[in-house]
Amino acid sequence: MRVLDDGVEITLAGKSSDSLFVWSIAMLGCALVVAVICFTLPVPYAIGAVAVWAVLMYFFNQKKHAAKTHKHHAQGTLIIKNRLLIINGVQISLSQDAKISSDGERLSVFDKGLCHHFAGFTDVREIEIAKAVLEGQKIAKRAKEIKMGG
Image (cartoon, rainbow, N blue to C red; front, side):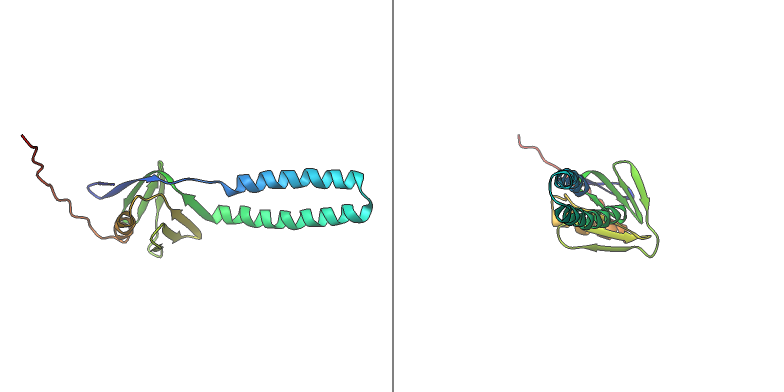
């Protein structure tokens, strides 16, 4: 973590994952299985397979919609200023109605119908400092003298 004149810069070193990619691969596999069932088995089995695939498509669409409104960030450089986030060069301005919370492992920011979850912090103190800066508190920079032995 590095303290800036008007905020902090934190390097997130978490593991990012794309659950939609995994779902997409699973849906592709299911579609192939359904196609084989439709061509080889009797009609009742084909109807059942298509019905199961339709239910899976519903859950995939729910996940896809959630991915549009819930953004997960776990890697990169996070710059936090008063009511402003910059993650990997993308700037997010927060309104006065933004809700900022932390659960000890991640920082969550709810604003304008979007939820941004930030994980990958190296220490719980980084999360608390980030939350304080977003809420408008100032951070005092203190210069410390370092003595070298010799």
